[in-house]
Length: 472
Image 1 (tube, rainbow, N blue to C red):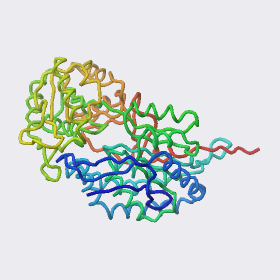
Image 2 (cartoon, rainbow, N blue to C red):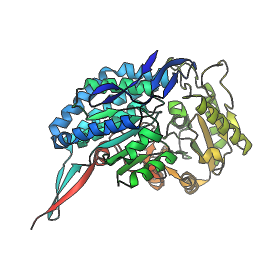
Image 3 (cartoon, rainbow, N blue to C red):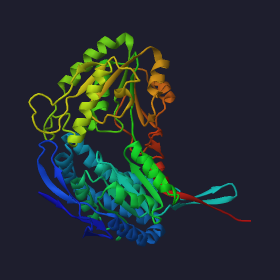
Image 4 (cartoon, rainbow, N blue to C red):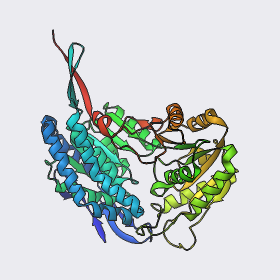
């Protein structure tokens, strides 16, 4: 049984001053597995003060010192890989394969940042001037519940590489994952205050981080409505803001694609992380001439997906986070049917044989129009909308007809043709004939999917400000 009642401030685990206690449940069993006492605004102020004290020394550190810190962080997190994996399964319901990927990725973030930092030029000659890339200052890092370990470590890696101390607020819906990751980070032995971690509500801890003048930079991953609130809160103190937000990604299967290979990949893109992924390809665009063949294959693949115990290596889809997520998905499935989409797999309720746990049937709708709610809104569960198109121009138009533009996928037997289509898509990232991202390339969205980029050189530069010195 977990009892989490401390925040990590100034290099130590300290009791929080907040008094709100929240129960933690295992989503696969609905059983209580612990409690967390949330931090409050005063705890956030303590954490910000600690980061402010650490900032001058971190900003003055050299490249070699920062690389050494990143290597220590990588080693410390790598040593806790199994613990992070198990916490992701227990608290979040991530299937074993996905939970293992996330735990491996958490340590890889620091290796990637060290590699990027080693090649990065902080001083450049531009025209008659010298431009120095300087740390922006103390950073507030706000991580989502669907990717606690990966998001925390990715953001922290870039902040350390840039020489920025940080205050980290993982979602209060992932306290066990946050705890085990923070314990791993602590083992790296970084200077006190270089990073601080606390769990709390957005209304107090999040608001304090977003409005406090001691925070110079905000990096937030989450929903677009929350991102807008954070951006508005940051405006008065002119904080630099990076936002990775909502997605409604389109997967375009071109008419020359090998369906036997492309459609399983497209379904994996749609249902990854139990469907709780901002990059999920939840709009699948199929040529109308090949629609009957596609629907038959898609229904067969979706029906065969194993839903159940996330600890079982054969499980493809585990439970959703909680009851609220379960009910949200049920409402979208009902809405899809009410608006005229054709249900070809899945549907409302739990899968057969599962009477407890927040399990959802992998659901596929055909005959979907792009103006239906299931095609417009981020559902955040294993629900796929299949849309037909005539020709590349219509496929691109449908894919781009969205307020969001985070990620897209293109499948084709002709790589050059696929790249041509990819170039026309309004998305921050387009993956061609693959669903695995490049973790050194920039990640982020266009339109209402965000501002700024993470990962690699672009992620590092998000925590830096150019300073120009021009002499006579």
